[in-house]
Length: 416
Image 1: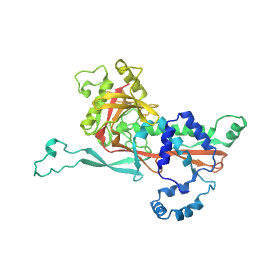
Image 2: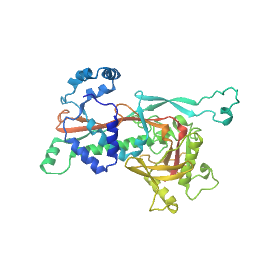
Image 3: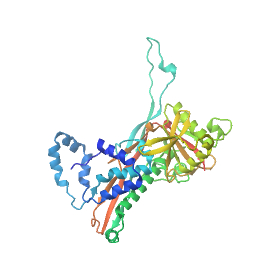
Image 4: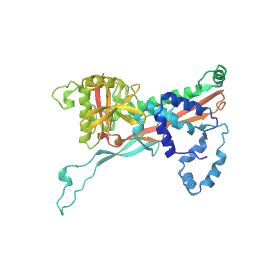
C-alpha cells in the first residue's frame, strides 16, 4: 500500500462528519481503532509519497510501482504511520483549535518557507485607473518584499507501559489507556500550535522579543512568528518602538487610537469596528475576529444591554462548531474563541499597561504552510523497540504561518 500525501475527497468527507460529533464519541472511535494492530504504514513507505520522482513513476505505472514498494509493506518491528487515526484525531485537534480549520493550507517550499509579501497594493486612486478613450494606460505595481517564515516541528511522545495495559485488562476497566494518552498528546500539540500562531517568536532573541511580557513574546527558535509580533511594534514590520506604517494597531482604551474625541461606553466593540474599517480601507475584507475568553467576557458585558439573550447571533464557523457574531462597519463577523489564553498578555511599550490582543483578520491573507502531512499524524513505535516494555506514540505536525498581506490583519490591544 502506498501512503497518501494529502486527503482525498472521501477522507475530507469523513472528517467533516467527524467534526459534528462530540468529543466523547470521537474518543470512542479512536479507542476502537486503536485495537487494530499493525494497521499503520511503515515510515519508510510513507516517505515515498513525498518523493516526486517515485510519485511520477507511480502515475505512469501504478501496478508496477506498487509491486516495487511491496517489500516495504511489512511491520518488521519498525515505526508505523497510523493514517487510520488521522481523521478522528485531527477532528479532536480542531475542536480544541477551530480557527486553524478556517485558514488555507499549502505545502512549505523548504525548511524555511519563502514567500513574496505584498506591503502596498499600489496606486488605487480613480485618476490613476481611468483613462481617455485613446489614452495611454498608466503603469502601476504593488509593493512587495521577500519574507521568510519558519516551519516549526510540533511533537510529543506519549506511551503506556505493558504492565499498565495488562493491569487495565485484569481489573476490568472500561477504558483504553493508549487512547487516553494520545488524546492528551493531541491537546498538548493543539495548545502549542495555538500559542505559536498567536504569540510565537522564532526571530528575535533580544529587545521586545526577549520575554513573554514583551510584545514580541518569548523566543522559541523551533516555532514560528505569530500574530502578536507580526502585527505589533517590532520585527520586519516596525522600526524601534513606534507604530509601523504597515501595521494596523488600535488601542481600545485610547480615544485618539479609536479616531474619536472621547472614549465610548463600549470601547472594545468600537475598537474592533475601527480595526475592521482600517483593514477595509487598505483593500482587505475582514472575515473573523479572534480573542481569548477573558476579553470575550468583557465584550459580552459591553453588549449585554444591546442583545436579546434568548436569541444570540451565531454562525457555524466550521462544521459542528458555532460562534457568536459582532456587528462591524464591514458587516457581521464571527467571534472565534481561543482556549487557554494562548495569546497571553504583555506590557504595552508606551505606558507599561498589561494588555491582551484581539485580532481582526482577512483570512485570505494568512496561510498555514506545512511539511509532510497537512494534518496531525501519529507515529506508532511498537513494544520493545526502544528496549522498554511500553507502547509509544508520537503525534506530530510541521506547521508555519505565511502572512501574505500585513495590512489585512489588525490587532486591538485591550487592557486586562
